[in-house]
Amino acid sequence: MSARVVSLTGATGFIGSVLRERLITRGVEVRALARSRSAMTADGTKWISGTLEDEQALAELTRGADTVIHCAGKVRGRNARDFDEVNVQGSKRLMEAARMSGSCERFLLISSLAARYPTLSWYAASKFEGECQVREAAGTIPVCIFRPTAVYGPGDRELRPVFEWLLRGWLVTPGKGDSLLSFLHVDDLVSAVMQWLDAPVMQSQTFELCDGQAQGYDWASLASIATDIRNAPVRHAVVPAKVLKGIARANLVLSRFTRQAPMLTPGKVNELMHPDWTCSNARISAVLGWEPQILLGQALRNHLY
Ligand SMILES: NC(=O)c1ccc[n+]([C@@H]2O[C@H](COP(=O)([O-])OP(=O)(O)OC[C@H]3O[C@@H](n4cnc5c(N)ncnc54)[C@H](OP(=O)(O)O)[C@@H]3O)[C@@H](O)[C@H]2O)c1
Image 1 (spheres, helix red, strand yellow):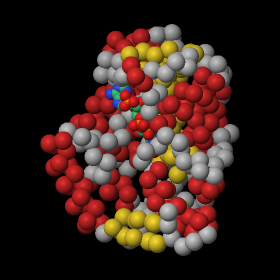
Image 2 (cartoon, protein in one colour):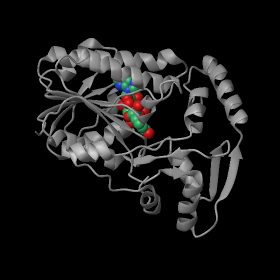
Image 3 (cartoon, protein in one colour):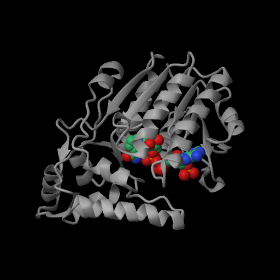
Image 4 (cartoon, rainbow, N blue to C red):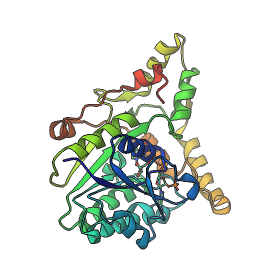
C-alpha cells in the first residue's frame, strides 16, 4: 500500500526534515506540524501551525490523512515532566486526534531503543510510556513502533561533535569506555519508513533498527575506524564517571536559572554508561525486507554525517 496523505510531526527536526523531503520527492501529500512560522519551508509541504499540546491543530493535521507518522519528540529536558508532556501526553493526544479523524489507516511512532530500558533516564521512561499510551489510545488503528538506536547524519547536532573530535584524533569516552554501541544513518532510517509505507497495512508491532554492524561498536573499534581514515593514531581521553555525573548534576541546578534544557543530565550519563546498546534488524528485515546500506565507517570516510 502506498500512502496518499501523510500527517507528519517533527518535520522541522533532524530526522523529520529528511523524512519530509523524501516523502515530498515521492509525490506524497505531506501535512506537517510546525511550532514556528520560520520553519515552514516552501517545498510543497502543507504546514499546520501548532504544537502537540494544541488539540485543534492536531485535528487539522490528521483530518483526511490515511497515514500518521509521529516523529516529534523531546530529546532534552530539565525534569521528568518536560519529557512526559511531549513524549507521553503529546503522543497520546496525537493518536486520539488520528482516531477521531476517522481517516487514519495506520500510525507510525518513531520511538527509541532507549525505550527498552525505561529506568535509565527521564527520556527513556517517556519514550516507553509514550509507546504504551499510543497503543492504548489506538483503538483499531494498527500502530507500528520503530525503535532506532542513535541516529546520525547531516543536520544532527548530538553525535556530530563526537565524530568530528574522533576524526581530529581524539576519542573521549565516559568512564572506562567499555560499552557496546550501535548507530544508524538517518537515510537508512528514512528508507525503513518508506518500506513501511509501501508494505500492506500490518498488525501492530515494534521493530528495533541499527546499521547492522554485527556485535555493534565498542569505543576501541571507533578509534580503529578513525585511525584507518586518518592514517594516524587516535588519542584516548577518559572522563571518569564521577566527573561526568558531577557535571550532569551541576547542569540540572544551573538549568533552574537559565531555563535551558542541558544536554548532559544524570539520565544522559546513565545512557552513555549503559553496557550494551546493540540490537538486531532481524525482525524488521523479515517483515519489511529492509536492510540498512550505510555502515558507520563508510559514513565517516565519506563525510556523510
Ligand atoms: N536523533 C537520534 O539519535 C534519535 C534516536 C532514536 C530516536 N529518536 C527519536 O526521533 C524523534 C526525532 O528526533 P530528532 O533527533 O530529529 O530530534 P530534534 O531534531 O530535536 O527534532 C524534534 C522535533 O520535534 C518537534 N517538537 C518537539 N516538541 C514539540 C511539541 N511540543 N509540539 C510539536 N512539535 C514538537 C521539534 O519542533 P521544533 O523544530 O519546533 O523544535 C522538532 O521538529 C524523537 O522522537 C526522538 O526521540 C531520535
